[in-house]
Image 1 (tube, helix red, strand yellow):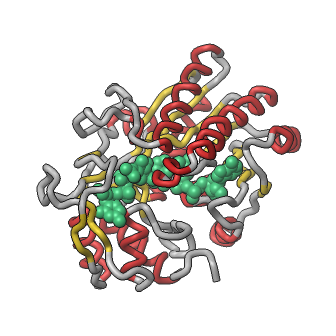
Image 2 (cartoon, protein in one colour):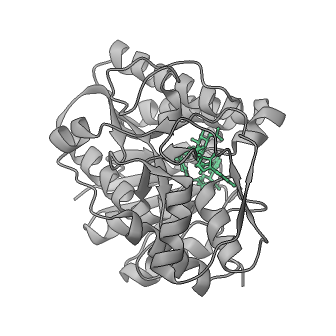
Length: 339
Ligand code: NAD
Ligand code: UD1
Protein backbone atom coordinates (compact mmCIF):
# COMPACT_ATOMS: atom_id res chain seq x y z
CA UNK A 1 0.00 0.00 0.00
CA UNK A 2 1.22 3.48 -0.79
CA UNK A 3 0.90 7.02 0.47
CA UNK A 4 -0.52 9.29 -2.21
CA UNK A 5 -0.58 13.08 -2.41
CA UNK A 6 -3.72 14.09 -4.29
CA UNK A 7 -3.65 17.69 -5.51
CA UNK A 8 -7.13 19.03 -6.24
CA UNK A 9 -8.53 16.14 -4.20
CA UNK A 10 -11.58 18.10 -3.02
CA UNK A 11 -12.78 18.53 -6.63
CA UNK A 12 -15.13 16.39 -8.68
CA UNK A 13 -12.75 13.74 -10.03
CA UNK A 14 -10.27 14.05 -7.16
CA UNK A 15 -12.83 13.34 -4.44
CA UNK A 16 -14.11 10.24 -6.26
CA UNK A 17 -10.52 9.08 -6.67
CA UNK A 18 -9.88 9.57 -2.93
CA UNK A 19 -12.75 7.15 -2.21
CA UNK A 20 -11.26 4.48 -4.47
CA UNK A 21 -7.74 5.02 -3.06
CA UNK A 22 -8.90 4.74 0.55
CA UNK A 23 -11.07 1.70 -0.22
CA UNK A 24 -8.00 0.04 -1.75
CA UNK A 25 -6.01 0.60 1.43
CA UNK A 26 -3.87 3.53 0.30
CA UNK A 27 -3.15 6.50 2.56
CA UNK A 28 -4.17 9.88 1.19
CA UNK A 29 -3.02 13.47 1.68
CA UNK A 30 -5.08 16.09 -0.17
CA UNK A 31 -3.74 19.52 -1.13
CA UNK A 32 -6.47 21.84 -2.43
CA UNK A 33 -6.96 25.61 -2.30
CA UNK A 34 -10.77 25.13 -2.48
CA UNK A 35 -10.97 27.65 -5.34
CA UNK A 36 -13.54 25.42 -7.09
CA UNK A 37 -14.65 23.07 -4.32
CA UNK A 38 -15.50 22.82 -0.65
CA UNK A 39 -14.18 20.75 2.21
CA UNK A 40 -17.62 19.15 2.46
CA UNK A 41 -16.66 16.77 -0.38
CA UNK A 42 -13.82 15.44 1.79
CA UNK A 43 -16.10 15.12 4.80
CA UNK A 44 -18.26 12.89 2.62
CA UNK A 45 -15.25 10.90 1.38
CA UNK A 46 -14.39 10.13 5.01
CA UNK A 47 -17.99 9.27 5.90
CA UNK A 48 -18.38 6.96 2.90
CA UNK A 49 -15.14 5.08 3.45
CA UNK A 50 -14.97 5.28 7.25
CA UNK A 51 -11.30 6.12 6.71
CA UNK A 52 -9.14 9.07 7.62
CA UNK A 53 -7.36 11.38 5.16
CA UNK A 54 -5.09 14.37 5.69
CA UNK A 55 -6.26 17.65 4.21
CA UNK A 56 -4.01 20.65 3.65
CA UNK A 57 -5.69 23.82 2.42
CA UNK A 58 -3.16 25.47 0.16
CA UNK A 59 -1.94 26.18 -3.34
CA UNK A 60 0.26 24.07 -5.61
CA UNK A 61 2.10 27.30 -6.45
CA UNK A 62 3.20 27.59 -2.81
CA UNK A 63 6.64 25.90 -2.59
CA UNK A 64 6.73 26.17 1.18
CA UNK A 65 3.47 24.27 1.66
CA UNK A 66 4.62 21.60 -0.79
CA UNK A 67 7.94 21.19 1.06
CA UNK A 68 6.09 20.93 4.36
CA UNK A 69 3.81 18.21 3.01
CA UNK A 70 6.71 16.15 1.63
CA UNK A 71 8.63 16.62 4.91
CA UNK A 72 5.66 15.50 7.01
CA UNK A 73 4.58 12.56 4.85
CA UNK A 74 6.49 9.74 3.17
CA UNK A 75 4.70 10.25 -0.15
CA UNK A 76 5.19 7.46 -2.72
CA UNK A 77 3.36 9.08 -5.63
CA UNK A 78 1.32 12.13 -6.60
CA UNK A 79 -1.98 12.30 -8.48
CA UNK A 80 -2.23 15.82 -9.84
CA UNK A 81 -5.80 17.06 -10.43
CA UNK A 82 -5.38 20.66 -9.25
CA UNK A 83 -6.04 23.20 -11.96
CA UNK A 84 -8.63 25.45 -13.55
CA UNK A 85 -10.94 23.89 -16.14
CA UNK A 86 -13.50 26.37 -17.49
CA UNK A 87 -12.96 26.77 -21.22
CA UNK A 88 -14.78 30.13 -21.57
CA UNK A 89 -13.04 31.63 -18.55
CA UNK A 90 -9.66 30.55 -19.93
CA UNK A 91 -10.24 32.90 -22.87
CA UNK A 92 -11.00 35.81 -20.51
CA UNK A 93 -8.24 35.32 -17.93
CA UNK A 94 -5.50 33.36 -19.71
CA UNK A 95 -2.78 34.23 -17.20
CA UNK A 96 -4.70 32.58 -14.36
CA UNK A 97 -4.81 29.41 -16.49
CA UNK A 98 -1.12 29.59 -17.45
CA UNK A 99 -0.26 30.13 -13.78
CA UNK A 100 -2.44 27.43 -12.17
CA UNK A 101 -2.14 24.77 -14.86
CA UNK A 102 1.36 25.25 -16.27
CA UNK A 103 3.34 27.04 -13.54
CA UNK A 104 1.39 24.99 -10.95
CA UNK A 105 2.53 21.74 -12.57
CA UNK A 106 6.14 22.98 -12.70
CA UNK A 107 5.93 24.07 -9.05
CA UNK A 108 4.68 20.63 -8.04
CA UNK A 109 7.35 18.81 -10.08
CA UNK A 110 10.11 20.97 -8.52
CA UNK A 111 8.92 20.14 -5.00
CA UNK A 112 8.65 16.44 -5.93
CA UNK A 113 12.21 16.46 -7.23
CA UNK A 114 13.48 18.10 -4.03
CA UNK A 115 11.67 15.45 -2.01
CA UNK A 116 12.86 12.57 -4.20
CA UNK A 117 9.32 11.62 -5.28
CA UNK A 118 9.17 10.83 -9.00
CA UNK A 119 5.87 9.05 -9.64
CA UNK A 120 3.15 11.24 -11.05
CA UNK A 121 -0.30 10.73 -12.56
CA UNK A 122 -1.42 13.83 -14.45
CA UNK A 123 -4.99 14.85 -15.45
CA UNK A 124 -4.84 15.55 -19.14
CA UNK A 125 -7.67 15.78 -21.64
CA UNK A 126 -8.77 14.49 -25.02
CA UNK A 127 -8.71 18.14 -26.03
CA UNK A 128 -4.93 17.79 -26.71
CA UNK A 129 -5.61 15.77 -29.90
CA UNK A 130 -5.46 17.54 -33.23
CA UNK A 131 -9.02 18.26 -34.36
CA UNK A 132 -8.23 16.80 -37.78
CA UNK A 133 -7.93 13.28 -36.30
CA UNK A 134 -10.90 11.03 -36.97
CA UNK A 135 -12.40 9.17 -33.97
CA UNK A 136 -11.77 6.71 -32.46
CA UNK A 137 -8.76 8.69 -31.23
CA UNK A 138 -5.68 6.71 -30.25
CA UNK A 139 -2.55 7.80 -28.43
CA UNK A 140 -0.41 7.45 -31.56
CA UNK A 141 -2.33 10.23 -33.29
CA UNK A 142 -0.84 13.72 -33.38
CA UNK A 143 -1.71 16.34 -30.81
CA UNK A 144 -2.74 19.71 -32.18
CA UNK A 145 -3.20 23.29 -31.15
CA UNK A 146 -6.29 23.35 -28.89
CA UNK A 147 -8.84 26.02 -29.78
CA UNK A 148 -8.85 27.47 -26.26
CA UNK A 149 -6.36 28.44 -23.54
CA UNK A 150 -7.53 25.72 -21.16
CA UNK A 151 -6.72 23.02 -23.71
CA UNK A 152 -3.44 24.74 -24.48
CA UNK A 153 -2.36 24.53 -20.82
CA UNK A 154 -3.02 20.77 -20.84
CA UNK A 155 -0.95 20.33 -24.00
CA UNK A 156 1.95 22.37 -22.62
CA UNK A 157 1.88 20.58 -19.26
CA UNK A 158 1.94 17.22 -21.10
CA UNK A 159 4.91 18.31 -23.20
CA UNK A 160 6.84 19.63 -20.19
CA UNK A 161 6.29 16.36 -18.33
CA UNK A 162 7.37 14.33 -21.38
CA UNK A 163 10.59 16.34 -21.62
CA UNK A 164 11.19 16.02 -17.89
CA UNK A 165 10.92 12.22 -18.02
CA UNK A 166 13.12 12.10 -21.13
CA UNK A 167 15.82 14.11 -19.35
CA UNK A 168 15.78 12.25 -16.04
CA UNK A 169 15.11 8.51 -15.85
CA UNK A 170 14.00 8.72 -12.24
CA UNK A 171 10.63 10.09 -13.35
CA UNK A 172 7.65 7.86 -14.03
CA UNK A 173 4.69 9.83 -15.34
CA UNK A 174 1.21 8.85 -16.54
CA UNK A 175 -0.69 11.29 -18.74
CA UNK A 176 -4.36 10.33 -18.53
CA UNK A 177 -6.35 11.83 -21.38
CA UNK A 178 -9.89 11.98 -20.06
CA UNK A 179 -12.80 12.04 -22.46
CA UNK A 180 -16.06 13.34 -20.89
CA UNK A 181 -16.33 12.54 -17.17
CA UNK A 182 -19.92 12.38 -15.89
CA UNK A 183 -21.89 10.48 -13.25
CA UNK A 184 -21.51 10.39 -9.51
CA UNK A 185 -20.86 8.01 -6.64
CA UNK A 186 -23.60 5.35 -6.33
CA UNK A 187 -24.42 6.55 -2.80
CA UNK A 188 -25.66 9.90 -4.15
CA UNK A 189 -23.50 11.63 -1.52
CA UNK A 190 -20.84 12.84 -3.95
CA UNK A 191 -20.96 14.30 -7.42
CA UNK A 192 -20.16 17.23 -9.67
CA UNK A 193 -20.86 20.63 -8.14
CA UNK A 194 -20.12 23.37 -10.66
CA UNK A 195 -20.29 26.97 -9.54
CA UNK A 196 -22.53 29.29 -11.56
CA UNK A 197 -23.94 28.33 -14.93
CA UNK A 198 -22.57 24.92 -15.99
CA UNK A 199 -20.46 24.88 -19.15
CA UNK A 200 -20.74 21.14 -19.63
CA UNK A 201 -23.68 19.10 -20.83
CA UNK A 202 -24.34 16.75 -17.92
CA UNK A 203 -24.63 19.25 -15.05
CA UNK A 204 -26.78 21.44 -17.30
CA UNK A 205 -29.15 18.53 -17.99
CA UNK A 206 -29.48 17.63 -14.29
CA UNK A 207 -30.03 21.28 -13.30
CA UNK A 208 -32.84 21.56 -15.88
CA UNK A 209 -34.33 18.32 -14.56
CA UNK A 210 -34.23 19.57 -10.96
CA UNK A 211 -35.78 22.93 -11.94
CA UNK A 212 -32.74 25.15 -11.40
CA UNK A 213 -32.57 26.04 -15.13
CA UNK A 214 -35.41 26.39 -17.58
CA UNK A 215 -34.16 24.74 -20.73
CA UNK A 216 -31.12 23.05 -22.19
CA UNK A 217 -29.69 24.71 -25.31
CA UNK A 218 -28.43 21.98 -27.64
CA UNK A 219 -25.50 23.50 -29.46
CA UNK A 220 -26.05 22.55 -33.09
CA UNK A 221 -28.25 19.94 -34.80
CA UNK A 222 -26.58 20.13 -38.20
CA UNK A 223 -23.36 18.21 -37.49
CA UNK A 224 -22.36 15.29 -39.66
CA UNK A 225 -23.50 12.78 -37.01
CA UNK A 226 -26.41 10.29 -37.01
CA UNK A 227 -28.90 12.78 -35.48
CA UNK A 228 -27.04 16.03 -36.21
CA UNK A 229 -25.99 16.68 -32.58
CA UNK A 230 -22.45 16.41 -31.19
CA UNK A 231 -21.08 12.99 -30.28
CA UNK A 232 -18.86 12.47 -27.20
CA UNK A 233 -17.42 9.63 -25.16
CA UNK A 234 -18.99 9.92 -21.69
CA UNK A 235 -17.15 8.07 -18.95
CA UNK A 236 -18.42 7.35 -15.43
CA UNK A 237 -16.38 9.26 -12.84
CA UNK A 238 -15.92 6.08 -10.75
CA UNK A 239 -14.49 4.25 -13.78
CA UNK A 240 -12.24 7.27 -14.30
CA UNK A 241 -11.20 7.24 -10.63
CA UNK A 242 -10.28 3.58 -10.94
CA UNK A 243 -8.16 4.32 -14.00
CA UNK A 244 -5.97 6.42 -11.67
CA UNK A 245 -5.40 3.45 -9.39
CA UNK A 246 -4.45 1.30 -12.38
CA UNK A 247 -2.11 4.03 -13.68
CA UNK A 248 -0.57 4.32 -10.23
CA UNK A 249 0.15 0.60 -10.11
CA UNK A 250 1.66 0.78 -13.58
CA UNK A 251 3.87 3.73 -12.60
CA UNK A 252 5.12 1.96 -9.45
CA UNK A 253 6.65 -0.62 -11.82
CA UNK A 254 7.76 1.41 -14.88
CA UNK A 255 9.67 4.55 -15.70
CA UNK A 256 9.30 7.14 -18.47
CA UNK A 257 6.24 9.08 -19.53
CA UNK A 258 3.26 7.53 -21.28
CA UNK A 259 -0.21 8.70 -22.34
CA UNK A 260 -3.43 6.69 -22.00
CA UNK A 261 -6.91 7.52 -23.21
CA UNK A 262 -9.55 7.12 -20.53
CA UNK A 263 -12.91 6.74 -22.25
CA UNK A 264 -15.39 3.95 -22.92
CA UNK A 265 -14.73 3.84 -26.66
CA UNK A 266 -18.42 4.53 -27.34
CA UNK A 267 -19.77 7.82 -28.66
CA UNK A 268 -23.20 9.18 -27.66
CA UNK A 269 -24.98 12.16 -29.17
CA UNK A 270 -26.44 15.04 -27.17
CA UNK A 271 -29.97 13.95 -28.11
CA UNK A 272 -29.19 10.37 -27.11
CA UNK A 273 -28.00 11.64 -23.71
CA UNK A 274 -31.16 13.71 -23.22
CA UNK A 275 -33.54 10.92 -24.35
CA UNK A 276 -31.75 8.27 -22.29
CA UNK A 277 -31.77 10.56 -19.24
CA UNK A 278 -35.55 10.99 -19.60
CA UNK A 279 -36.08 7.25 -20.03
CA UNK A 280 -33.83 6.06 -17.21
CA UNK A 281 -34.98 8.64 -14.68
CA UNK A 282 -38.58 9.13 -15.82
CA UNK A 283 -38.24 12.89 -15.81
CA UNK A 284 -38.55 15.31 -18.75
CA UNK A 285 -35.75 17.63 -19.83
CA UNK A 286 -36.85 20.64 -21.90
CA UNK A 287 -34.49 21.62 -24.63
CA UNK A 288 -34.24 23.78 -27.72
CA UNK A 289 -31.76 23.70 -30.57
CA UNK A 290 -29.41 26.64 -30.77
CA UNK A 291 -26.41 27.48 -32.95
CA UNK A 292 -23.16 25.52 -32.70
CA UNK A 293 -20.78 26.50 -29.89
CA UNK A 294 -17.48 27.90 -31.09
CA UNK A 295 -14.62 25.43 -30.77
CA UNK A 296 -16.84 22.30 -30.69
CA UNK A 297 -16.07 19.34 -32.92
CA UNK A 298 -18.78 17.05 -34.33
CA UNK A 299 -17.45 13.79 -32.92
CA UNK A 300 -14.89 12.76 -30.33
CA UNK A 301 -14.53 9.31 -28.82
CA UNK A 302 -11.67 7.17 -27.62
CA UNK A 303 -9.83 4.11 -28.73
CA UNK A 304 -9.16 2.84 -25.20
CA UNK A 305 -7.30 -0.34 -26.20
CA UNK A 306 -3.97 0.87 -24.78
CA UNK A 307 -5.41 1.55 -21.31
CA UNK A 308 -7.24 -1.79 -21.33
CA UNK A 309 -4.12 -3.73 -22.40
CA UNK A 310 -1.43 -1.91 -20.42
CA UNK A 311 -3.22 -0.70 -17.31
CA UNK A 312 -5.53 -3.68 -16.90
CA UNK A 313 -8.36 -1.15 -16.65
CA UNK A 314 -11.86 -1.73 -17.92
CA UNK A 315 -14.79 0.70 -17.75
CA UNK A 316 -17.77 -0.97 -16.06
CA UNK A 317 -20.57 1.55 -16.23
CA UNK A 318 -23.04 2.18 -19.09
CA UNK A 319 -24.50 5.50 -20.23
CA UNK A 320 -27.69 4.51 -18.35
CA UNK A 321 -25.67 4.10 -15.12
CA UNK A 322 -23.98 7.48 -15.65
CA UNK A 323 -27.31 9.24 -16.15
CA UNK A 324 -29.02 7.48 -13.24
CA UNK A 325 -26.13 8.29 -10.90
CA UNK A 326 -25.86 11.94 -12.03
CA UNK A 327 -29.57 12.37 -11.34
CA UNK A 328 -29.44 10.53 -8.01
CA UNK A 329 -26.73 12.97 -6.84
CA UNK A 330 -28.53 16.06 -8.18
CA UNK A 331 -31.95 15.25 -6.73
CA UNK A 332 -30.52 14.42 -3.30
CA UNK A 333 -28.33 17.54 -3.37
CA UNK A 334 -30.22 20.17 -5.41
CA UNK A 335 -27.66 22.80 -4.40
CA UNK A 336 -24.63 20.56 -4.59
CA UNK A 337 -22.46 20.63 -1.47
CA UNK A 338 -24.03 23.90 -0.32
CA UNK A 339 -26.77 23.48 2.31
P1 NAD B 1 -12.54 20.48 -10.19
O1 NAD B 1 -12.51 21.94 -10.42
O2 NAD B 1 -13.75 19.89 -9.56
O3 NAD B 1 -11.26 20.03 -9.33
C1 NAD B 1 -10.04 20.72 -9.36
C2 NAD B 1 -9.63 21.02 -7.93
O4 NAD B 1 -8.38 21.69 -7.94
C3 NAD B 1 -10.62 21.91 -7.20
O5 NAD B 1 -10.96 21.33 -5.96
C4 NAD B 1 -9.86 23.23 -7.01
O6 NAD B 1 -10.24 23.89 -5.82
C5 NAD B 1 -8.43 22.75 -6.98
N1 NAD B 1 -7.43 23.74 -7.42
C6 NAD B 1 -7.46 24.53 -8.52
N2 NAD B 1 -6.34 25.26 -8.61
C7 NAD B 1 -5.57 24.93 -7.54
C8 NAD B 1 -4.30 25.33 -7.08
N3 NAD B 1 -3.60 26.27 -7.73
N4 NAD B 1 -3.82 24.79 -5.94
C9 NAD B 1 -4.52 23.86 -5.26
N5 NAD B 1 -5.74 23.44 -5.65
C10 NAD B 1 -6.26 23.96 -6.78
O7 NAD B 1 -12.25 19.76 -11.60
P2 NAD B 1 -12.33 18.24 -12.01
O8 NAD B 1 -13.44 18.10 -12.98
O9 NAD B 1 -12.30 17.37 -10.82
O10 NAD B 1 -10.98 18.11 -12.83
C11 NAD B 1 -9.79 17.63 -12.26
C12 NAD B 1 -8.66 17.73 -13.28
O11 NAD B 1 -9.02 16.98 -14.44
C13 NAD B 1 -8.38 19.14 -13.75
O12 NAD B 1 -6.98 19.28 -13.93
C14 NAD B 1 -9.11 19.21 -15.08
O13 NAD B 1 -8.54 20.16 -15.94
C15 NAD B 1 -8.91 17.80 -15.60
N6 NAD B 1 -9.93 17.40 -16.58
C16 NAD B 1 -11.26 17.51 -16.25
C17 NAD B 1 -12.23 17.16 -17.18
C18 NAD B 1 -13.69 17.29 -16.85
O14 NAD B 1 -14.52 17.28 -17.76
N7 NAD B 1 -14.10 17.41 -15.59
C19 NAD B 1 -11.84 16.70 -18.45
C20 NAD B 1 -10.49 16.58 -18.75
C21 NAD B 1 -9.54 16.93 -17.79
C1 UD1 C 1 -15.59 20.63 -23.13
C2 UD1 C 1 -14.42 21.46 -23.58
C3 UD1 C 1 -13.13 20.65 -23.41
C4 UD1 C 1 -12.99 20.20 -21.96
C5 UD1 C 1 -14.25 19.43 -21.55
C6 UD1 C 1 -14.22 19.06 -20.10
C7 UD1 C 1 -15.20 23.03 -25.29
C8 UD1 C 1 -15.12 23.40 -26.73
N1 UD1 C 1 -14.57 21.87 -24.96
O1 UD1 C 1 -15.65 19.44 -23.92
O2 UD1 C 1 -12.02 21.45 -23.75
O3 UD1 C 1 -11.86 19.35 -21.81
O4 UD1 C 1 -15.42 20.23 -21.79
O5 UD1 C 1 -14.36 20.18 -19.29
O6 UD1 C 1 -15.76 23.75 -24.47
N2 UD1 C 1 -23.59 20.78 -25.20
C9 UD1 C 1 -24.85 21.30 -25.46
N3 UD1 C 1 -25.38 22.17 -24.56
C10 UD1 C 1 -24.76 22.54 -23.41
C11 UD1 C 1 -23.48 22.01 -23.14
C12 UD1 C 1 -22.92 21.14 -24.07
O7 UD1 C 1 -25.45 20.98 -26.49
O8 UD1 C 1 -25.30 23.36 -22.64
C13 UD1 C 1 -23.01 19.80 -26.15
C14 UD1 C 1 -21.70 20.22 -26.76
O9 UD1 C 1 -21.90 20.96 -27.93
C15 UD1 C 1 -21.03 18.86 -26.99
C16 UD1 C 1 -21.56 17.98 -25.86
O10 UD1 C 1 -22.75 18.62 -25.41
O11 UD1 C 1 -21.46 18.31 -28.22
C17 UD1 C 1 -20.60 17.86 -24.69
O12 UD1 C 1 -20.23 19.16 -24.27
P1 UD1 C 1 -19.33 19.42 -22.96
O13 UD1 C 1 -19.92 18.67 -21.82
O14 UD1 C 1 -19.17 20.89 -22.80
O15 UD1 C 1 -17.95 18.72 -23.30
P2 UD1 C 1 -16.96 18.93 -24.57
O16 UD1 C 1 -17.48 19.98 -25.47
O17 UD1 C 1 -16.68 17.62 -25.14
